[in-house]
Image (tube, rainbow, N blue to C red; front, side, top):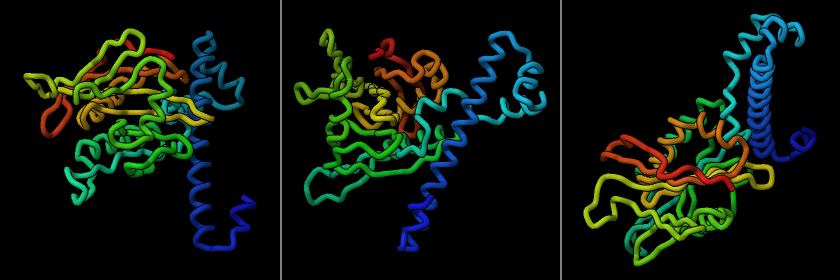
Length: 268
C-alpha cells in the first residue's frame, strides 16, 4: 500500500492500485473457498451444521450462505489468481505473412476464461510470441506447444513422464518411461476429425502453471473441454500435486463434441 501511495506517476499509481485491488479480491475468494472446505470437513467428521455454527459464532443460516456462495474446492486447481491465459501468435507459411492467432486457440482461451469465471478467478489474456521463453508472473494457463514458442519446452522439461517430440515430420506425445508414442488421428494415413492434447499441472515457486498443448490447435481446445467437464474429479484425484495426461477429443468445424483420457493421468 505504501509503495502504491508513493508512486509519483499518477497513471502508474492508478494501474498499480487496480492490480493490487485485483490481487486482494482474488485472495478474498480463496479465503472464502478455504472456509467452505473447512466447514465441509467438520461436517464430514460428524458435526452438525448447528454445532459448526455455534463453534464459529455465526448463525446456521450464515453457514448455509457460506456453503452456497463460496467457490468450490477445485478452484485451487488454477491457483489463487489472477490467472494469465496465454495463446501463441502464429506465423503464416512465409516470413512475409501476417501473424495471427488460430481460431481454435481463441476458442480454447475463451473456454478457459469461462471456466475461470465460474470459479471466481480473474483471467487476463496474453499473447505468446514465437520467442517467448519466460514463465508469466503469478498463476497462469499456457496454451502452447513446443513448435510455437520456447515457453512450452521450458515446461515440458519439468515433466518426468511425458514429452512432445517430432519424429518423421510428425508430432507425438511420448511416454518417457517406455517410449510409447501417441499420435493425432487427424495425421493418420486415413485422417479422422479427432486430435490429441497434452495437459500438465505445475507448481513453480509458489505459483500454479497449467500447461495445455495440442498436436494441433483442436487438441488444445479438447483439453479445455475435458477440464470443463471433469475438473472436480481431477482435483479430487490429485489436489495440489503435479501431474500430466493425454486427452483425445473429437470435433467438428465449430466445436469439440467429446473428450476423454487416453490413459490414466500420471502423478509426478
